[in-house]
Amino acid sequence: MIWRPSHHLRIVQAADAVTTAGSFVIAFSLWDRFRRLTEISTPIRVTTNDFTLIFGFSLLWVIIFNMLGAYSYQRFTSLWKELTNVVKTTFIGVCVFFAAHYFLRFGNIPRTYILAFTFVNLLFLALEKTGLFYLAKELRKRGISRKRVIIVGTGNKTREFIEVLKKNIGLGLDIIGLISEKPVWIEKDILGYPILGGLKDFEKVLHSHIINEVIICLLSNQFGSIRVALDCCEKEGVQVRIFSDVFGPIVKSLQIDQIYGMKIISITHTLDREVDLYIKRLIDIIVSGFLLILLIPLFVIISILIKVTSRGPIFYHLNWVGKDRKPIKGNKFRTMVNNAELFQDQLQSKNEMKGPVFKIKNDPRITRVGKFLRKYSLDELPQLWCVFVGDLSLVGPRPPLINEVKKYESWHRRRLSVKPGLTCLWQVNGRQKISDFDSWTNMDMEYIDNWTLRLDFKILLKTIPVIFRGTGV
Image 1 (cartoon, rainbow, N blue to C red):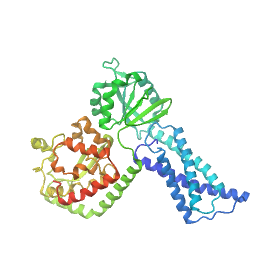
Image 2: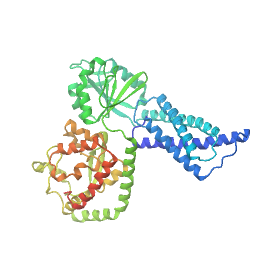
Image 3: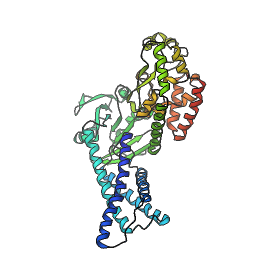
Image 4: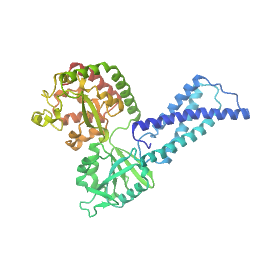
C-alpha cells in the first residue's frame, strides 16, 4: 500500500469498497443489455436485499485486500504489486461469492452475470489502483506526505540510491544527510548531501534532527559495522530500510520489495494490526465526540471558576511530541498561577520524579480550583479534542513535552513510536507511588509490546474508578 497516514488508508479502503459495489451495478447494467440482445437468460429481479448483499460483499473485498497485505504501509510498493493484489482479491472474492450463493441461494443469479462482474471488477479496481498510485506520487512531488530520512553509508550503494531518489521524486523521501560508515571521511558532502557524522555519532544525529526513517546503504561485507545503528533504531522505534546485496537472517518483522531494480528490506519494531488500529481510532472518535458534546455544561462551569478565581487564561497550551516524533499541540484547563513555568527552575530541587519529568506533590503554583481539577483529572478534559482530531488516543503513553524528550535516554524514545493517550498503565497502576521515570517507561514498553483492543478496554475500565477516587493530584 502506497499510503501512510491512517486517514489516507481509510480513503483507499472506502475507494475499494465503492469500486467493488459499483462493479456489481455496472456489470448488471451491461449484462442486462446483453441479455436483451441475445435472450440468453431470464431477467433478474432487483430487491432491497440485493443492495445489502452488494454492501456486504464490498466489505468482503476490503477484508481480502487487508489479508493480502495490500493496506500495510510500504512506500516502495510497485504498481505491479498493486495490480497483482487486485487479481488475487477478485479471484478469491468471486470464489467466496460462488460458495456463498451455492449454500445460501441468494436468488436466480446467472453464471454469465458473475463472469461479467469478474471482468468489470478487475478492470475498475485496476484503474482505481493505477490512479491512486500516480496520485500519491504527484502529491509527494508537491510536498505532501514526504518523509525525512538519513542514509547510513557513503559508498557506491549510497550514490546509487541517491541517484534513484533524484530521478523519482514521487517516492517522497527527503534526505537530511548521511552517516559515514568509516571512522574518517574526506568529503564534506556526497552528491550535494552533507555527512552529519560517523556511526559513533549516530544517536546524537538522530536526536538533533526530526527523522522519520533511516536508510542503510551498505555492501554485505560492511554490515558488521552498523550494529550500533540498528540497536539504536530498535530501541527508539524508528523505521529502518536496508538497500543492500545481502539477505541474511534478520530478527524482527521485515518485508522485501523490488522497485526500479533495487531490493529494499523494511524492518519495523511495532505491531502492525490495521483492522484493530482502525477500530481503536473509531472508538476514539465516537467516545471523544460524545463526551465533548455531553460535557459542554461542565466545560462552561470550569471555565467560569478558573476565570473568576485567578488571573490568566482559561486554558494552558502545551507543546508535545506525538507519534513518530511529530510536534503536536495540546490544551488543559489552567490549574496553576499565570506564567507558572517561569518558576519551575526555583522548584527543581523539590522534584519527586527521577528522570526528565518534573512532578512535586504539593506544588505551590497550583491554585485552589486547580487543585480540585487535578484531583479528579478534570483539567485534562480539553484533551478530548486532541483525541477527536487524531493527535492523541484515549489509551496510550502520556504525551511528553518537547523539553522532556531532549533529556530522554535512547531507549525512552521508543515511547514515541505509538500514538500518545489520555490514560495508560502508569495512570491506573498507582502513579503517585511511582517516582522513577524508568519504571514509568517500562510500563509504556509493556503496553506497546502487548497492545490489544482488550488491553485498551481494560485500562479504560480501570481509569474510571481512579478518577472518582480523586488520586490525580
